[in-house]
Image: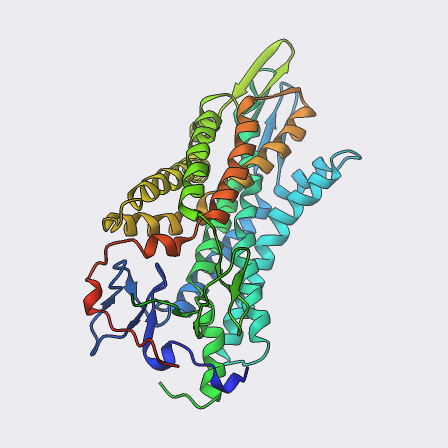
Length: 214
Length: 214
């Protein structure tokens, strides 16, 4: 198949519904168009995609710092009180039998959020610079970012269950630390960021260079 | 019938025709590789059966203890809602609400909406609220984190095992079953089957999408 024959829906003034996938013709003038089938608001591209995505990426990056520096869990016994950050939790989990789980927590809690922030920044900058290289790979990267994001919530679930169970006052109790809310915020903000990004922007430049105005 | 086989790829906006698929086949976007549609034989009936099973699993998962512990002659156990409640009492209302949504509300809304959708489309044309519910399902689905929760439970098991003897509850097995059923639901469900049966918001007759373009 020849790439010159490839046309986007936007090129022909057709709007694809994000809800049900139906194609509709854009309304005349500046009025809003609603999908005739499912009534969702139709856009050529997600509105203000780049600005919105940057805003959520920056907010998530800011929360990433306290999420990693502040303790997420405090263990209290009659003799001691220990506060653990996410990284300390990963180290504590490292033992001859449970090291695979330690690796899983490290990947889900530390690596994935950081990788997501870097990946989204990369996608945003390449779109803003009008790059036409590796469009397919960048789309695949976007799909991965969308898919793995939720797994970062792992540590928040771990915290919730450990805190809920270990309430054996005065013997021993566990309390959530201040870091956990920042951590949950990182996950939620990066998920919204990924959702705000419109992968079709990756391909738009390609068509501009194949001689398409609009 | 005006067959809506002319569609735009949601990831790259390429206009294309999705062919009629034989069982086991799936159509990919020739430009970006996105899966456009997969053949789902007997989609609506199979999904309905799986959804009913998932509803039962969800009820069990939330009604009985998830995990427990014994230490120094004392016993404690918790449900998902119990964990959410303790997080709230321990001064983490934001985290508590996120957990409640991801572990209980999102899967419950998803399963309840799917039940209503699948029952309503049995007698086409399905009323317009079916479109609204299906769009609601699509929006909540990324926030439904049952599988992340199960991994979280496993990690907390290991963490608590260092402090006390852990007891696994029946709810854990119900969650495992729920994950399998939710995955089976999404791989047997073809949303297109529903969109073909819903009543249009603006009436079909006003809709003119060029069948012969591109």
